[in-house]
Image: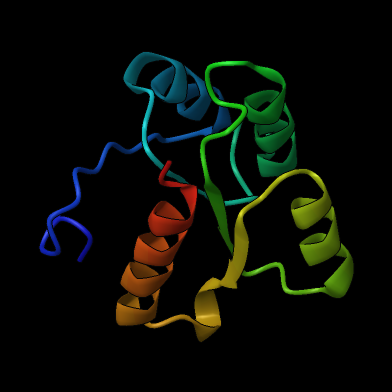
Length: 106
C-alpha cells in the first residue's frame, strides 16, 4: 500500500536488522513493531534515539500491544505516533505516514 502511494519501502526481518537498515539507508521515517526477534522494539527505539544519525527520524510504532503502559512507554521513548495494527486501516496508515513526514519536514 505504501509503495502504491509513492513511498519507497525497505523492510527488516528483526530488530537487529532494523537497526542495520536504519543506519545504512537513513530513512525519512521508520515503522516499528514492538514484538521482534533478536531485539525488542522498545530497545530498537531507544537505540535509534541514542544515535545521532537516527535521533530525529520519525518513528511510528505499529503494534497489537494496546495497553496504556505500552503506548506511554513508546511515546516517552521518542515515538512520533503509536498505532494499534488491529484498529488501523491501510489508508489510515498512509495518512499517518504522510502526517508524520509533514510534521518532520524542515
